[in-house]
Image (cartoon, rainbow, N blue to C red; front, side, top):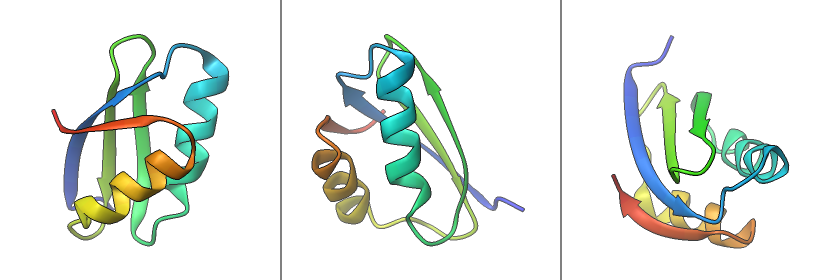
Length: 72
């Protein structure tokens, strides 16, 4: 059960493929339960069992090839 919901702004998520790449990458972070991404808006909502470290989220998104813009 998710106790935390955090929304981030990510540039470059403009297709179903991009959504899949970001979803897979973020899903590997410990404690992440679910990820909702709205294609074209750059809004990525992460549901997790614990508060996430924004630095880990940033590095994960950047390593996947997308531009992390911070919390929305």
